[in-house]
Each structure stands twice: as structure tokens, then as C-alpha cells.
Length: 140
Image (cartoon, rainbow, N blue to C red):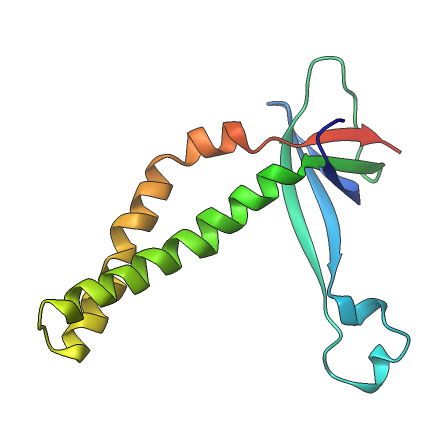
């Protein structure tokens, strides 16, 4: 059984000389596809720009419809890196600081401050992460 994938339809926005392709994807919340979304204020649609490296054999033109494919496991890793691990750092730091008898307000500030080295580390390894989080683009 193959790896499960997530696909999105998008349009090529720009192709540059360095082999980078910018693809525009319209992301809809669940409410946006609802029949009565016009009657409430929860409807939401956003444009996301995804930058993909193209291979030598691929030719794309601005406005061309494409399908973006990503392994589902990479989406899981993105959620872990962006939300779960920072939450663990924050809550873990808070318990440790309060457990040592520190004032609760100071403990909260220090726990939040622990996120600075976490996100700084993510920033420093961004090139490695960018290489691991790859998309496949297929013309429509």
C-alpha cells in the first residue's frame, strides 16, 4: 500500500529564472463550502502561495492550472513542529518553573521565553526543513 497523499488544485502565479515556481492555492474553511455560509460570518477563503522548485524537464506558464501533491506524513510533521512541540515546551517549562517554587507570574514569562530558543532553532534549520518538506507538481 502506497503512502497517502494530500492534493490541492492551484494555479501557477509566477515562474522565475532560478527554477522556482510560485503556485496560488485557494484554501477554504469547512464553512466556505457550506450551503448556508452566506448567512453567517464564519465563511473564510484565503489565498496561499506555495513555492516549489521545478526540475529541468518541467515547463510551467503563469495561469496554468496544476495539482500540488504532498505526503500526508509531512503534514503531520508540520503540525507537530508548529503546534504540538511548542505547546509541550511551554507547558513543560511552566510545570518545571512552578515546581521549583518560583512565582507563578515569573514562571509564565519564563515558560513563554522558552519558545524563543525553540523558534530560533527552527529558523536556523529552515533550509533542512525546506528540503524535507517537498511538493510534487503535476499539470492539470
